[in-house]
Image (tube, helix red, strand yellow):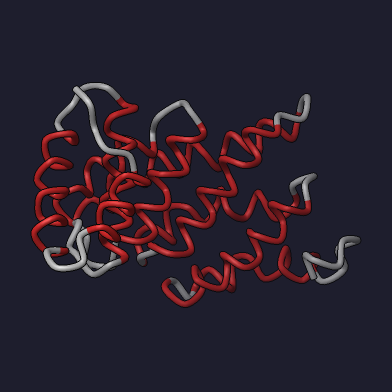
Length: 199
């Protein structure tokens, strides 16, 4: 089955000046068929197109579960697409956010485990994706559940993760104010960080 890429969709939208709505509805229908595929590459490609169309104002809530499937892919390129779709499409009332808790915990713990032994940079970047996603979709329950993992990353060896963690904590504090009391001592230590980007 030949499916359109995101580039093809953008070119098609630009080419259809008069019937843009008709072309987009055809693309959405094709993408809905691609979402049901068992091939993760096809799903990731479809999710990429859906995310683009969502930025143009079309609803993508029918693809929320697919975003979680792509987020859990072992390939980093697919994870990036899934996390972007989650950041763009998930809101406070999205019912599948609860399904992301274990996935996000696993990604954040992967970075903690990689800092202990040999430096595994893929774990660091995957945790960076997870932290970014948490800061965009955080709810009170998610903040409470992920606070221990996020707090552990405040002392990670990579300044990239420490910086993202400190910024993410602000969003956690907004949704779950008690977290500030629980993490205040570690947050004070970040003020003396050797890397200026963390401070």
